[in-house]
Length: 439
Image 1 (cartoon, one colour):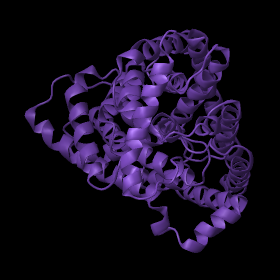
Image 2 (cartoon, rainbow, N blue to C red):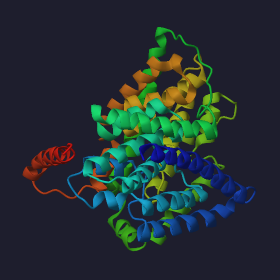
Image 3 (cartoon, helix red, strand yellow):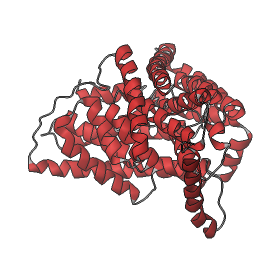
Image 4 (tube, rainbow, N blue to C red):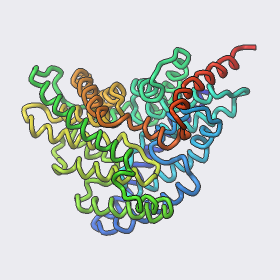
């Protein structure tokens, strides 16, 4: 059953990637030469998708990674996993995510693929004779790692993602399940999509002078501050969105989504179409130095549309847009330090911004290294990831964990209850482990 589930996750990852490319191409075809149509299409699709998410597919919103973290680490709640994973979530994640991307929103597919993989693997529990909470969590962890691996074609990053981001620990009992899931999912992705590099092979020297430390540090600080600002914008919405608007968001999801969609459309038109979609093409052009440079303000307007798209509450991820924003900052740094290859500086900033947002430096640098086959940049990528994540941590907690606590953890009472929570979770784990011993 584990093998079958991993194969299904690989199939879903490849097909979802194809569909996301198709819907963005459809949207760009609609507005080609008629940019004003975006003022109608984007608000209409966004408003309708937000309304459907609230009404029928609650739990499918956002990237899906906070849901996995809540299921793995939240206080005991037997209904939480059923509310956040399963066939209903699978339908909403794919259908409404594609609808938002059809509207040109700045949403990625990689985070949703993690949620899709977890939901597929969770459904496989139906074929096991005995199911425990520990087994359900193990299946969710394996499906999440397989989903990320299939989405990026980065198997090593899938393992690190599960360890660093989802579990924050490493248990020997999960080794085989994780690696088996990633292997089978990766084989399917390899068979259907080929042995491709997500962004392509970059051209950068393997050896850099000692003076290269300066652009690395500057890039890490810039990306760390920008990533921290993004996290704060999502986590502190009550501080910068007026209370009346927040109340209106709860009462009128259709109008809320349409209003944000209109803002995204206006920015897209004003930026000559640079902000439509996840930003994959812009990042790839900057990374490969194809000569099609984006405007100097690209990372700023992309950052803004990313915030607006995410707070709609639609299913959609942060990985691709974060990498694209980082690439935009990389163009800044390459203009400041023109003596170094642009590809290297863009890759460094991609790692820096992603590490600042997720505060998972190992996963961030391995993802980018595998996507560009950038073995010669291992040390600069690692250094940037570590510095930028620490800079961001001075201002904000890790985004996915904080979102999980805000949205999916049951509210806790006084400090004594908070102190008792880890003990309750430990007791629950012991009880489940005892129950699983052979009888």
